[in-house]
Image (cartoon, rainbow, N blue to C red; front, side, top):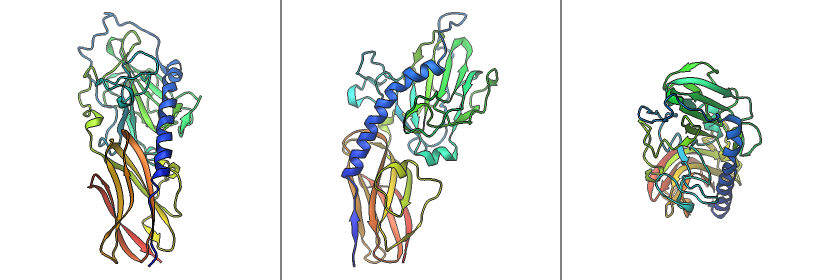
Length: 341
C-alpha cells in the first residue's frame, strides 16, 4: 500500500519566523500611527494626582485563556530605542513585548474566530469620549488606514482605549455612559495591525500610558503568559493540500471531516504559548494497521504566543482514522476523520 507522509517543517518554520518578525516590526509602527488618530490629549483630573487608589479594572475579553485568546505583547518599559523590557524584567528577544509598545495586545486564533464575533467589554465604568469604526478590518500588514477604536473617559481623568476593532462593530456612541462589562464592539484587525487582536491601553490624567498589569490594576488578570501551557486554538483540514499559513490564518467558516483517500490533504493548526524546547507533533491512528503514524514533528526554538503549522498526509484506506495533536507527548486535541474513496 502506498503512503505519503509529508511534514511541512522547514517551510512552515521559515514562513512562521518571517511572519513573527514582520508582525513585530509592523506593530512597532502601530502606536505612533494610532496614537495621533485615537489617543486623547493630556488632561488633568481635579486633584491632579492621577491616583490609582480606586482604579480597579476588569479584563476586557471573556473566554478561556490560551484557547480563545492569548496575550501576545505586554507594555515595553525600556525607554531606549531598539531595546525592550516587559513588566517581568525580561529583555531583548526574551521580552514579551516589542520596542515602544504601549498597552496590551490580546490575539485571537484567526479570522474565522474574528468572523464569529469576539466581543470586547468595558474594563471600568465611564463615559464614551470617542468612537471610530469605518476602516477595513482584515489586515495582515500595517495599513495607513485609521484604526477602529472606542475611547472611554473614567473618574479622575483616567482613560482606556480599545483598538483595532472590527469594522462597523462599535455598540456605543460618544457621550454614552457605560458600566464595567458593557459590550463595546468586536475584535478586528484594522489600522496598523498584522493579525486580529485587541490593543488595550490605560492612560492617566496627564495622558501618560500606564501598565495595568505591572501596577496590579486588574481584578481578574490571567497569570503571566509564559506560565501558560500550550493549547489548541483552532484546527482545519484542507483538501487539496495547502502550502502556506495563509489558509490557516483565514480558513473560512466551514471545516472538512470527510477526506478522499485518493488525494493528499493538509492538517493546519493554530497553537498558543509554545516555548523553546517544546516538541509539537501530529499523528494519525490507522484503522488498518492499528498503529500511530507521525506525519509532522517540530522542535520549537523561540517563544511563540500564537503560531500556525501544517502537515500533509494521504490516507491509504477507507475508514475512520484518529487525528492527535501533541506537545511534549501530551495530547492537546483528538478527533476522528473519515477517509472515503
